[in-house]
Length: 179
Ligand SMILES: CC(C)(COP(=O)(O)OP(=O)(O)OC[C@H]1O[C@@H](n2cnc3c(N)ncnc32)[C@H](O)[C@@H]1OP(=O)(O)O)[C@@H](O)C(=O)NCCC(=O)NCCS
Image 1 (spheres, rainbow, N blue to C red):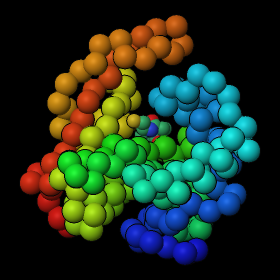
Image 2: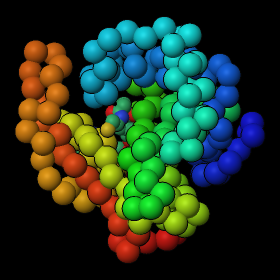
Image 3: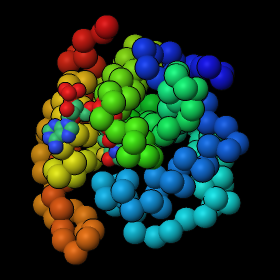
Image 4: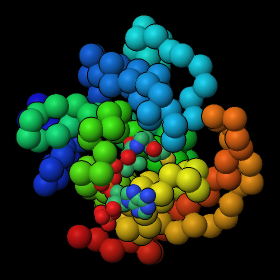
């Protein structure tokens, strides 16, 4: 493992480093992950590097590179965005770039580690996210981690010639079951 911060069974989370922009670029440009991430414009590596540096310097953002333990390889990014340190709330984001790394439990383990970190270390009170109702794997893994559907945003995003509804999902510290 390289500079691990949170260590799980199959994956570990570490600070984002130079070179990790390739994994972000893959998530945001490749048609497969864009299917559920809804990015509509291409972004180059230099732009991705700049975004990652800006987020690293932003005290209201915490981002990690998700890496598999075996083989030791970066596979995605997970973050808390727009952290409100007074309201103790944050937006949760996760993207595993390559389809070959989906449905192996990595996303669920990451989500669980991030909720434990949010409530047990950062002392946040609420985490929320938006997810397409069509993204069944994501909705299932968020529910497994303890998120609830709190509402539906109708026709919230447009992709592949149709509008998709999005769920607002949230989880409170009082609903969290520590491992
Ligand atoms: C969404 C994402 C984070 C999920 O992570 P993952 O590692 O692929 O998912 P996991 O293997 O941990 O868990 C998926 C769960 O959904 C279930 N699932 C998969 N497809 C499903 C479907 N069509 N209907 C219902 N459940 C489904 C799996 O069986 C599994 O549940 P289980 O562990 O109880 O068996 C990952 O696929 C990803 O990054 N995708 C691209 C980007 C993205 O969509 N990000 C989220 C944006 S909100």
